[in-house]
Image (cartoon, rainbow, N blue to C red; front, side, top):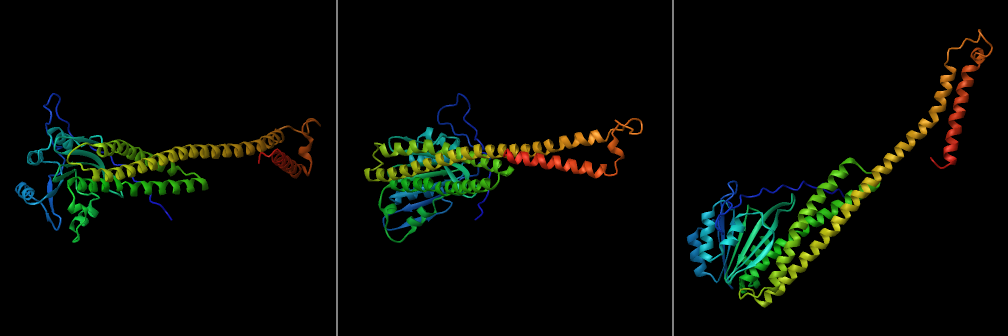
Length: 364
């Protein structure tokens, strides 16, 4: 079965950082960032309610009415709205600054009444398009900030909307935060498995015969694997910090689930390391096969040249303009009636003799 060729890893545009010397917590939006849209979900043990394009007033009202609220902010182009959300939920200014500056290393920070987790997310599995996602959660709220639309949260939303009670509706905000983080981590499995299939496909084609496009495909896959490794290694540390956190808003039973997500990240890192080693070996194999092919071509050309060198020498000898009438030593065979076919037969004999010698020496 044919495997799709690797898509080039899309370059990430870095957002504008705070000016040098600016006070901590200064928020500066990327001018190209989309305007934020709030999706609010109120969660209770026996019901849930979804509010599309929610306003800040709706946020304040639902926070007072629902035991658990999840606010999904898509777009980071309005720092005033982000700052107001931070005021409503008491989010730390430094964490909000890291949310707007979308070039952060995955990490987990803990404050008195809430935690902040920043991750890299693949929001489009086919093209492997990256974005930063920030997750805030406290005792009764979860807030996610995305750069643009597209996320792996559909299964979580379906579980919240389910009619039967489940853990997402009966437990605290830390379990909902776990479900969202776990969905992000699990979203890596598909692209990594696709990369593995592409590596196997390229390996099979290379064994049949290396092609020029294989080298390009291998380098593109290697770039993707490096990007995955850069996202997963610090993510593992962030998840480990969540499992060890001694915070009142992270309960002991939820820490067990965070530990399971940590195991998933370790499996992903192992798979990425394996793919990287395979790519390195395939690049070396491609170079070796290419060099062997060049050596084979050079050997064939050398053998052909070795055969034609004596033939060219003979043709040159018989092509000299000596007059046999002037002297009996001046190539008398030129007057022989069978001289031309005899010369061709002799050159054919020389060529066949050289071919037999090369085969006897196992050079062919």
